Image 1: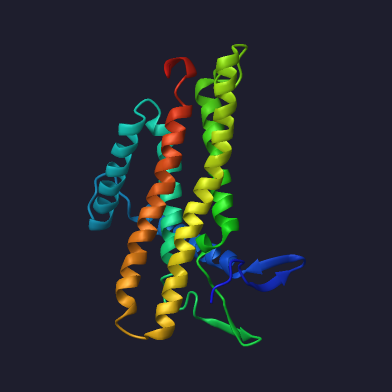
Image 2 (image 1 turned 180 degrees about the vertical axis):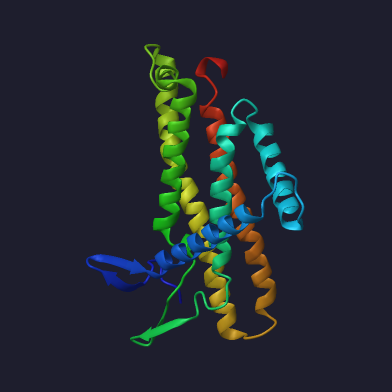
Length: 241
């Protein structure tokens, strides 16, 4: 049975290296390798299937960003796409053979060397905090500090009350984003571990397909909510009324 807390594999000094941290490093290595490879095959005029496919996917996602925030699509898109790709690959990394099953036994319990990072609340909370900080930093850079602060603070009592509610809303967004992603991925891993321990072949396949879909949907939900938040906060406060 999976534990809520990630398992520590070894220590570097006083720093515990967990299996979810190792999974993050694995995904980072895959992303960096992919970026290096793609940069070598890219041409001004597409002449290979992979480049055509990547440009088609980017065009779709950029069009989606423009439909939400036409005025700041160029600024928001890199964040949106980065969150989507990173979370998608981490969600799917738990489905790689050996992840969650390859490890060692300690006190009769299997300690996997790798475990899907988004099944660790520390990771999802970190992603939510990064989303929050990036959103507000982009807002300040786009509309200016004065307009940004006017969204939350005002001498008008009614507007001040609304601003306080928006601050509370921003805090609850962190909780919502982190727990939604963590809950769905952790629950999926529990189901897969349970089913796989009962049935070795065939039966787990539909659940694997379901987790592929869940991983895609959750990555899209997180990145879309971040994009919408950025679209709202990069709109000047006096323009949104």
